[in-house]
Amino acid sequence: MKKEIIYLDHNSTTPCLPEVLEILRIYSLEKFADPDSPYIFGKEIKDHLENFRKIIADLISAEPEEIIFTSGGREANNLALFGIAFNKKKGRILISAFEHPSILKSAQKLSKLGFEIDFIPVNSQGYVEPEEVKRRIKPDTILISVTLANHEIGTIQPIKDIADICREKGILLHTDACQAVGKIHIDVKDLGCDLLSFTGHKMYAPKGIGALYIRKGINLSSLFLDNQKDLENGTKPVELIAGFAKACEIVKNDLPYESQRLIYLREKLYEGFKNIYSKIYRFGISEKTLPNTLTISFEGLDSIKILKDLPQICASPCSVSISAMKIGVEKIKGTIRFSLGRLNNLNDIEKTLEIFSEYFKKCLKI
Ligand SMILES: Cc1ncc(COP(=O)(O)O)c(C=O)c1O
Image (cartoon, rainbow, N blue to C red):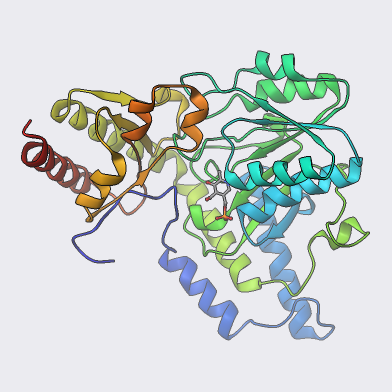
């Protein structure tokens, strides 16, 4: 990474950790056998693979056999929605209005295939209200899908309360946890969801590997084949799975310290922005938002222009999911997501504030 770049976009993707790269090297160059091969080399790798599955399952307190590997979050989301829909054959699916495009597009396709799709509104602070979920349930509702943490503003949704409602009504619950896993403590049993998607590249593992947690006893239909066991087919990318497992181990170990460190940096950034620009609007309630995420609107400005004018700052303009929150267009236009991570320190925060302060002084004559 160029020295002058300040990377504040860890919710988009993260770099691989050196320990992860080393594992990738070993499982690409040395321990590369196909785990389904009948000879000793293959069987040895199969044992390693199952150990990696256990480590990955442990991060969310699941059982190893409840984990299916996918190519990432999108595929896990597609598999969850289509897998349940095809298994149930017909019915209504409820999704929140600010889901990731991979959920929205799956729902769109399922609607064309004859499933009813309803949207649960999001309140002006960026949260789905369990009462709204309850209100929208109909006798033919088969599945509810609500993200665990929104990808643009990081608001953590009340999944546990929604799961209680689902259990009471006998409806399955999927949660897209691609932004949350590795950033907050997750225990699927405590959360009460039936399916949960997560992905490696948001937590310092390689791109191209993710997983779907499927609670024991839940049936999904394979998109292409007849057998549930074929959900995970093809030659397993053991090197990616090994890297994913290594990243899971590291983030799990560091989570208590790292989340406190990121909250400290995030609040420094927010306080700094408040001092240099008067019309700031912060999305979400800080205690109910991912520790690393600060999404703010610089009211009256255009986020795309700001980020174009400041190419050394890597952050994301937001608009798609926050439009579901029914807040003013002016706020949406100036919204930027700053997502911090292991690459950042206090120096980055101070430098970012300096760069923004200069920018506001120069361009806006503040
Ligand atoms: C909430 C959420 N779900 C799903 C995805 C897709 O994950 P992947 O890039 O691994 O397919 C992302 C990442 O863009 C995300 O933020």
